[in-house]
Image (tube, rainbow, N blue to C red; front, side):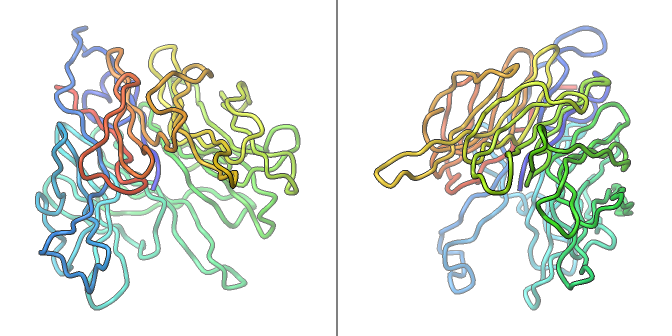
Length: 380
């Protein structure tokens, strides 16, 4: 699970808080206050209430934390009728109300069925039994989910096709051009436009290109300097007509060194990390003239030269100084509001929240990616 949405217009931000970036003023020019800082993720239940035959390592419950206290999401919203469990995979805030998408399941089979929970009800996403890589957003007051469908290809391998679902569950596929497979990494919203980014490729996995979809229309971008990209664009942020993306790429398939670059409007502008193992960007936020990128760099450590990821926030192409930035960890989500920078991610094997560079571990967030999205609820 990864990364998330951006909304920059004042009207859109007052309607729908996506968890990435917010305008600093309301329509009357007054600065709004953050009424809640939420972190979305999971918490492992090891209590006597758990059936340890079914969950030998404890049950992982989807939760959100507010002010350091966790709430199990199914305790608050319930489970779709006819199912036995619901595992929330993403959360946004719309008009002060929490909205989720997740998988519902029955005990007697392994099928996972995606649902949106919005306005007090569950809605099944149509034609989506094999949907994944899905992210929530809202356009105006309408909730959407962007993700991929899995199909069997000609050689019986799995192929993914990008798609958009509306809040009524209806699906529309996005363009693929001459390509047959894709990975979808991140989404963004600007005004009434929905953007997505990732990678598309055909039979030769080494020949993939970066992909950006705007309202389902595809534009492709090769790796810089004739290189290759196994991830394509990993994060996207949009401000007005400017589209920012990040790409992980390397010179050729025989090298293990990758570089992480920041792009603007389809052109590579800044090298964030050069010749690292696999540096990664997971989110982009634009606040005024400042561009924030969250992710990881990596280093070799210990006697065995073990590769570890280190959390990074880049501001305008330069790493910011944050707590534990040379320890094992990652930044997976950023929200910026009124000069304050909030970031969620990992420190070692625990979930953490950074506020203006200062880190606090989140109680109960144990394990990698246990706390991976920060969401601000701004008063309306």
